[in-house]
Image (cartoon, rainbow, N blue to C red):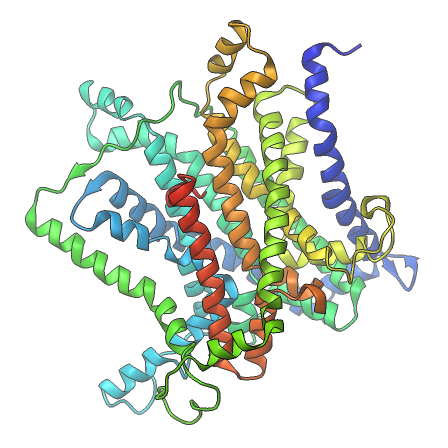
Length: 561
């Protein structure tokens, strides 16, 4: 007979296990089974083909994926961490404005971001051609593409993960801890290394994990910029569209193994020490920059950084005003009007992708919100056997590249199953909201867990010792404290779902066609202006959601991780 505590734990765990088993574990098992079959018979031939001499492209693509991901983590950290320290530890004119601009890449969906970089820095891009004309060169001095292009886009779009997680961690550090170390005679380096850095370690590891997983899952940048450079997520896509599902499943299993191995390593590192503080952070202690020269150097650097960060958004806006057929042989567009937006609004059916994206992202985020609260609480505050395994299962959807999640869902739900309530989900409207839900579960769980881990158990125990019931304590004390973390994760899940492309390109149908697919369709038709207009709508939607969350829900930008 279970006691009351164990019954509460079981009550929390049953829905969590059902969801993870049905929509994470079962699809992965189906993909593994498919990879072990050839013409209906069990065999290892698919793996032999993957590692065989005739298919060296697969091994090359695997190495390239890992190589690109590691470099993306490094470059993103080099940009994001210093920015977090500068904006959260020092005060100078324009700091608040510059810190707001620093997160602008997050409102640029992956596909739209890559498109903007192509328009800006590609061979026919505005910046290389402007430099060529300015210095009267015979050809453009540079153009992005291949590895450098992918890394540039990754560093630009992924450094906010480091910036936001570190900003949040810095703001949660109690300044009295550092002050105490200074008072005991420690110098700046010792205080940073012995006090500040250990408290930042969970944020750095979490950001590294996020960037690595996002980079492994990256599809848009390689899809548009790779040229002959192979990555495994692209190989999976090409195997799928060529009808070779067995090889797509094999590639998915191998890519999954690499991603999950990295996830396990990061978890081991993250769990080496206990970083909890006895009190909630009371805000960063900022130092006024007293040196006038240094103060204005920071301001000038801030302005330059602002221009660089806003260029893709400005380019997208300008190109969205270029009418179809008016920018053909010229280097720069010469005609601007609102025709692309008017065309979008004239036909009500043109809004279908917008409506679809909003609805599907909302449904998925709602599921992530509820699931994230329950799961985080169970993982952090309850004791049960198999907690580590459950934590790994929760993180697997983020570890898996989006194309792998797409293949898993195709192989699992192309037939009726108990988890799809006896229905075939592939080819229906609901397959994409389900995919978004699965993909972005870890965002809500991680952001909520980060807050819960800093909540000392004694606060909850004090309430219960005073006679409060468990649910009353959870509702009145725990939930209000963790709500910023829950909302931050949910907001990020919504934003990511609105801009999601790799899973969508494998699973969409005419009835659930999202904005990202419509952008790709417009690019294929060389209708760049209308593609940019769609991109602006996507960016605008994301910006509105973030503004509403900040203004009315009190979710600060740096807390969206």
